[in-house]
Length: 390
Image (tube, rainbow, N blue to C red):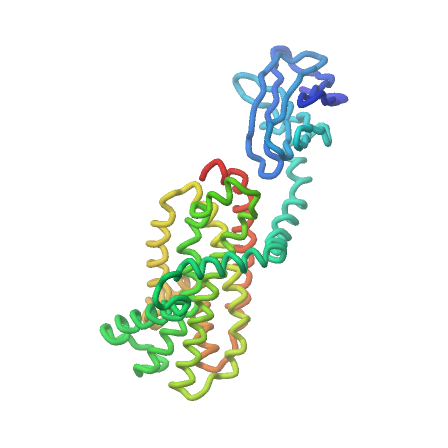
C-alpha cells in the first residue's frame, strides 16, 4: 500500500519543486496531472518517473492566469492512476497570476474527501452567482436589450412599433388558422369571442418563452468577438434573450388586456396575480437559456433542432385547442409540462376571475428553481471552454 509523507513545495520562477517521502511497491511509477480548479477539466500531464523512497520532481503550471490543482500520484501501466481508484495522492493548489506562480496549499488527499470538502463552496457559488450577475450587470443587460431592439428594427418603416406589430401579427395568424379555418373551440366558452380570448391567453407565456429559447443556442456564436477579445461577463447574454422574450410577452399582455376590456367590458381583479406566474416563467426561461447557450457552443445544429422542438412543444401544449380534447391517458404526462401549467393558470387568472391554483403553481416554482440553478451550473462549468470552442 502506497503512503506519502511530509509533502512540501518550493517555487523558483515559474517552476515548482515538489518533494515527499514515498512508500510504494517496486516497479511503480510517479506522475502528475494538472486540472482547472474552477471546473475540474484536465489541462496537462507531466512525464512519469520511477517511484523512489524520496520523491523529487519539478513541474510547471500552464501560462494562462487562473487557479490549478495538481494531482501527484502513483500509477501502473496496466491499471492507470492510483488516485482514480480511491487511493491517496498529493494535491497541490497553485495560482498563476501575471508573471507569478504561487503555491497556496499542498496536502495528502483522496478524491472522495476532496469532493466532500468542495461541495459546500460549489453549491454556494451556484446559488449566489446568478443573483449577483443580475444585480452587478443590470445596466449592461438593459443596454444590450436596448441595442438589440434598435438594431432589430433599424431602418424599417415601423421602427420600434414592430415590437407591437410582431406579436399582434403572430396571434392573428394563429387565430385565422385555428379559429376561422379549423373552427377550434373551447368547451368553457364555445363562441368565437371565447375562442379568441382563450387562445390568446394561452399564447401569452408561449410568446415570451419561445422567443428566448429559439435564439439562446446561437447567442454565444453571434457574440464570439466579445467572448474572445474582451473580459466579458458571458452569463448576461442568455439573460439578454430572456429579457427580450419578456418584452415581447409584456407587449402581448398589454394588447390582450385591451382586447379583453373591449370584448367583456372589464378586466378581473385576479389579473393582479399575474406576477406570481411571471416569476417562475422567467426563472424557467433563464435556466433553459443558459443551458441551451452552453450546449449550442458544442452542438452547432442545436438551433435547427430547437426549432423543431419548439414546434412540437407548441402542439403538445393546449394553446390552440381545449385540454379536454387530449386522450385521458396522456394528461398525467403532458400535465407535467411547465408550459401546460402556465397556460392553464393564465386562463384561470385572466378569463375565469380566479386566483392561481396552489398545488400546480408551487410545483411549477420548484421545477423553475431547479432549472434556473441547474442551467446556470451547466453554463458556469462550460464557460472556460467557450473561447476555444467558438
